[in-house]
Image (tube, one colour):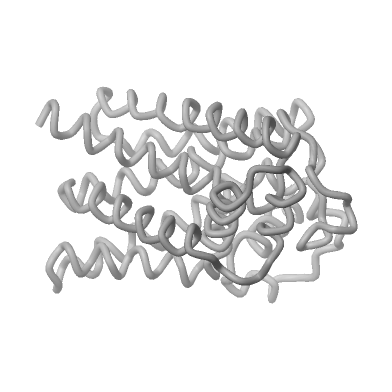
Amino acid sequence: MATRILAALVFFTRLPFWKLGEVPAAYFKNIVSYWPIAGWTTAGCMALALYAASLVLPPAVALTLAIATRLLATGCLHEDGLADFFDGFGGATTRERTLAIMKDSRTGSYGVIGLIVYFALLYLALSSLPVALAGSAILAGDPYSKAVAGQIINRLPYARKAEEAKNQTVYSPMRPGELALCGAAGLAPLLWLPRPAYALACLAPPLCWCYLTGLMKKRLGGYTGDCCGATFLLCELSFYLAIAAIYHAIG
């Protein structure tokens, strides 16, 4: 298990976990179930940056630094996928053309505008919360949304040939034990939420996931790595929007 966790940390972050040891390539096929554990690390970095910066800077600046911290920690891995997803699904109507656009390293207008809207909503949702609640939402939302998004590999097949994968890795569907681990790792951080009412926000990511995977099934007949990153970010965004809505409803 330790090697699989290390593989997930090496793959899903740009932090120097690779210095801890070499990970055989075969382990990367089964890392999605450990994605929420990588989320503990990225959420921790983001929340720590938010709390620390808010001690000496205005909340708006602290939140901007927190978002930048996660971008650095992940190397914009998921954001790159989100941009490609917007380009592909916005700029094409056929399966073949969608896959071709998503594989293109250039970012088009749909990708640029999509990222602008995404970051605007992310910033506005979190900035509408007190710093303490925003930090708790981050600690809960990142791992939980990765657990939800990770189920994409259990619902859909890979949409390309294995040799066409960007990272040359096609994820294996989760076995029962891996599914249980993924669920536990995603659900446990919800204990950071300060009030039971905020648990209602947990409904938003699965609804978002159902819509996105249905769209992918209809258009592509499967998923790609870009789809995984996009699904996580959009599920996480739906969680924060739901937290903001609950906070402003109950005070």
